[in-house]
Amino acid sequence: NRKKPLVVVTRKLPERVETRMRELFDARLNLDDVPMTQAQLAEAVKTADVLVPTVTDRIDASVLAQSGGNLKLIANFGNGVDNIDVTTALQRGITVTNTPGVLTEDTADMTMALILAVPRRLAEGSQVLTGENEWGGWSPTWMLGHRIWGKRLGIIGMGRIGQAVARRARAFGLQIHYHNRRRVAEQIEEELGATYWESLDQMLARVDIVSINCPHTPATYHLLSARRLKLLRPEAYVVNTARGEVIDENALIRMIAAGEIAGAGLDVFEHEPAVNPRLAKLAREGKVVLLPHMGSATVEGRIDMGEKVIINIKTFMDGHKPPNRILPSML
Ligand code: 8YV
Image 1 (cartoon, rainbow, N blue to C red):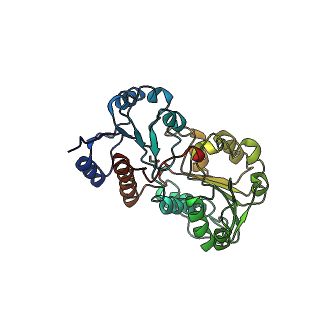
Image 2 (image 1 turned 90 degrees about the vertical axis):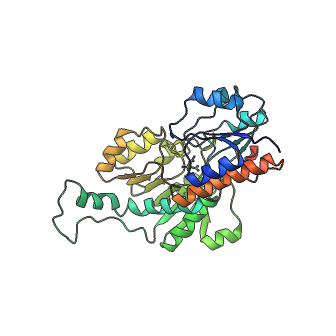
Image 3 (image 1 turned 135 degrees about the vertical axis):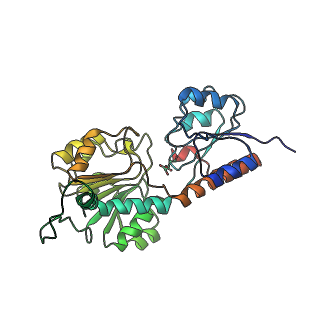
């Protein structure tokens, strides 16, 4: 009759997940769903055996410095682990896991939605009927967007989500180009009809739509820098469902406002939850479509993510290596 591990969960999770966690663990759940402060996080890691943070928790070196001998596992509720100082955690002997695989298709759907929404003026059209503007009736030259069929999509990051985006985009008649740290297997390239660009710069100069699908790491911070954004053609669109930090957001805003880039579909931002007010202005002008980090936000997906977290904790507590460990080579 082993003592149940003390598992601290920083945000409210789907009920089914919380019920299961209560059964299996000594679960401290955040039922109010108020984000924990840095001080509360530091307090939590002093006693917890396992911490379950989300994207809104910054588990940095100063929080980790407070961790007592108990904390052995950080089971992130989410795929991206840029909210956690993983290097410091590993140095302190703490295992870190994430929830890959279960949010791939949902995030790819949202990416595709943005790839369609911006060129086809979805938000603007809806605004005509729901906002203050009046619909004067159909006209042959009114509300014309741009076709995506036949255009070139450049995917940055050809992991699970990038490939799921490519499959969808291909079905919509887009030509698939990609840049990745490593070239993917030939069979996958063939299946996706994807062209690999070792040079991101060269790819950017040739594509009509760019989709960011890579993680945020020190190597990808501002990967779309002001210099690289300038390589895009003025007709190009940028879509980001990964992390805001991968794009120099100020440069993107400046260039869209100046007509040097056609527009953007953004689900993530550099300083979430704060969103640069200039983006809202561009949205009113129909140049950008903005979503509040909803890429993986489905009822089904959140339950699947919770189940992944539980499997990682259980496996770890049973003395085995959890399936979704973050290894130094992934950082
Ligand atoms: C989640 C995400 O909303 O998994 C990720 O990396 O960005 C989203 O799926 C968030 O991370 C939950 O913590």
